[in-house]
Length: 324
Image (cartoon, rainbow, N blue to C red; front, side, top):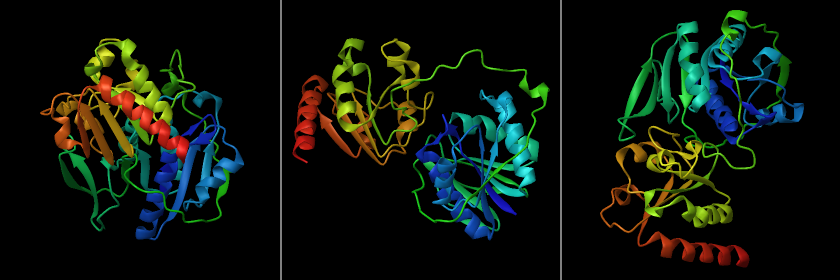
């Protein structure tokens, strides 16, 4: 019996989310008295694989096949399903990100498994196996019982802290040949957002909405992001207007994020937007409207004109960093 985590590598590197999964999976393995294994697809250096051992992973199975060089949910779910069977995994854990959301339900069908998406905590019980998740756009929690022998979980990013549990990790190549039938759907183009921090990976996000009035006013937002080492994001109307690229759109219909700090500038706080950001640990709202819904959800709020407030904040942040 084992717990298996899927660790995505990006150009051969693991991101923080993979280590969160390892920490979470290690705790579940301890609850079950099981071993913790990982599976990754593609070329990854031995040094990078060893990092997983810091968080309790005992063995990493590496699947290398040129046919899997481009991600497709069908092909990857088949590959990870093969690994799960080889390793006798009774719990399989993914990040609750776009790829994890695409693979997990397909794998649940393949393995005839129970699935809970968007877990936020460790299981409250392993008999019956019960996992807490957010429901109703994050306004409530539900305890979900996974009754089948194999359980699949997608874990919300930044919902479980990194916990070191050093162990010696063994890396093994897993021979797997994908069925040509599942390779029919292939991406025609892969565009990477090189040189910029992704909102999905950022610990700090500076986001703005229609309150900025025009795309040319984003300079002060990008400046704040640069000072804080943050990613930039936007509300849906902004991306729909073409002021900012669609990959920066966060919210219920965009990317769901959970950074340590989320700064919302000129965003009123519609329920759809809040549903995608309300897992943030600290939220700061800046808006001229004192009755904006965002203030009800925000940890801190500033009622004021963004064109006056943000430049002053940027100056103060620069001064603070200079004096450190």
